[in-house]
Image 1 (cartoon, rainbow, N blue to C red):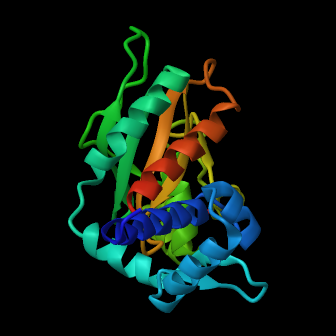
Image 2: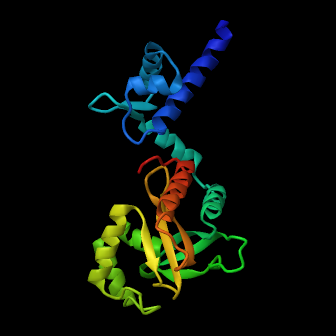
Image 3: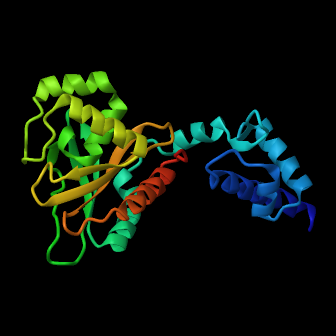
Length: 252
């Protein structure tokens, strides 16, 4: 290859290494990165050394490679002012097609979640969440996760402010019970709404983070309780992960 092509080749190889690192949930060894990219270990090592020097890659105490903070800084600049609905819609449609039920995107405003986007199945019998409608945090799946992110002090203050009103016989109205459910949901990364907002309707929700790690939205599915399946939990998490990746977040 001529000299003029070398810089482009290096950029392509650097991009391949960054993609390979991003695809791993844990710090990654040189051996794995070499295998994933097809690069000779010595070539991969030299490029990774340059990426470390520029802050795009870092190494942990055990020598594993991870994405560097410089990438997060740049991602934050690129994503400023992003339309999360536009970034999320394709992945919401993918989730709808997997489960055949309504998929919702929500954001928090004060003590409520607001439905800002929805994709619905073509079937006649389906759950409809109107865009622009609101619901209290404690009766929704994503709202419970948001309460978990905000901490126990916020949750207790929220309970005092709102009185935890019941919307159905299954709404959680006890502070201690809500704390238990919220802690469990936060540990799992997903939460359920078991007919707590509307009788006969069940939801599964997860949170969406941006490049800084901040929670920017909630993703959920709504379905009649008799159709809701435990197997959908993994699909909801995967769709949430895909949306977060579009926003520059690659954490768990």
